Every structure is written in structure tokens, then in C-alpha cells.
Length: 239
Image (cartoon, rainbow, N blue to C red; front, side, top):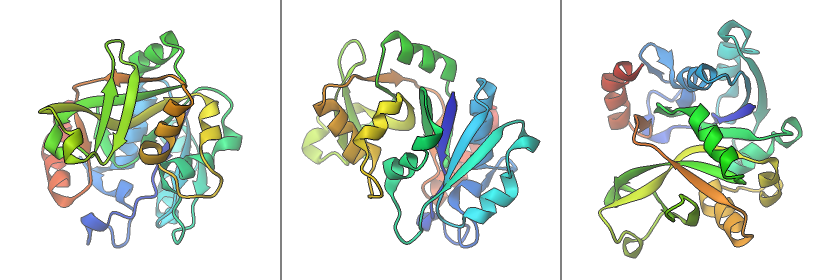
């Protein structure tokens, strides 16, 4: 199984740390966040990677190369920094390199996740797409995933309004996906497109099955300096 890691982030809210390096190359516990993402996947037997690059791509290429020194295989795709394609659009650049079930995840998130269990869940449900979800206090949520008793996704709301947040805790998107290759058919060529706001609503409308794999394990999206500080204080405890 191959994994696409989205690593093109500019990291505006992490400046000045990201003036000369892309966000996934910020260090936590003496290693880039991106390396932690690769090591998690490698722990569960994933060794073939496509890293989607955009901002300061050469910094990542110089560090990781073809991946051999890290015990993995790495290929790269490139976005134009002046015309970013979004999470889905960037993933579409890997279409010719994918011919089976695959993973898409983010290179600027630190997490603990049993990927083997999630893959088994995906296959057991014969799912078209499986999302990792976790609970958050609704007022802090940037997404809302509505699921039924079998963990099938009924609705996906990106940037939910106040009226959507009608309970204290809700399921939110963990930005770790398992897809069947048919997902590419829902992504427009060379257009800015995100999974949450654009692709998942289309997939649900087409009545393709999306399931939610829920976890309550460690998860930090390194979106700002406060979250980075938290990660640097806590991440070593989950290794």
C-alpha cells in the first residue's frame, strides 16, 4: 500500500520558523514533523511514499532524497506555489502512481494511530473512503463528521456554522484517509480542491460509502506556535 503525504504547507502562522523551511520540516523531539509521519506509517509496514510538495520543495528533497537512508521508498510530486491545488488537487498529481487502495495523510500532524486496525476496518466495510475521526469540543471544531451507529458517514461539514454545532462534543476530521483509486474521479484536474469542502460532499451525493474510524489517541495539528509548543512538551511521551 502506498501513502501520499501532503507536505506543501507554507506555515504562515508559524513564522519566523517557516521563513526558510516548509512547515513539515519544523522539528519536534529533534526530528522534522514529516519524519515522524513517515515513521508512524513505516511502523505499520507502509514503505512506499509519494510526498506532495509545494512551498520550498528542495528543502524536503535534500533531507529525504529517495528515502533509502530512512528504510523507505519516496517519490515526489510538485505544485506551483503560486497556484496551490488544495489537499485533493495535490493528491490527484499522484494518480498515475496509484493502482490500489492507498493512504493520504498530512505531513504537519503528530499522531498515534493503529493503521493496521484502520485498514482492516476499511476492508471489512468494503468502504470507498475511510476517515480517521476523533472527538473535540464543538466550539473548537473546524469540521463536523456526522456518522450513524455503524460508523458510516452521513454528512461531512467543513467549517461548520454555529447552528451546526448543536452538541458539546462532535466527531471531527483527523486528516488521515484510506481511499480506493476511484476517489480520483471526484477531483477536478488542475483546480484547487479540498477533500473536506469539495470531494467528500460529492462522494456522499454519489452514494459511495464513506466510513469513519474513530480514535481517542494523541493528535496535534501543528497549526500555530501554541500548538507547536504543546507538541514539543508532550510528543516524546507517546513514542
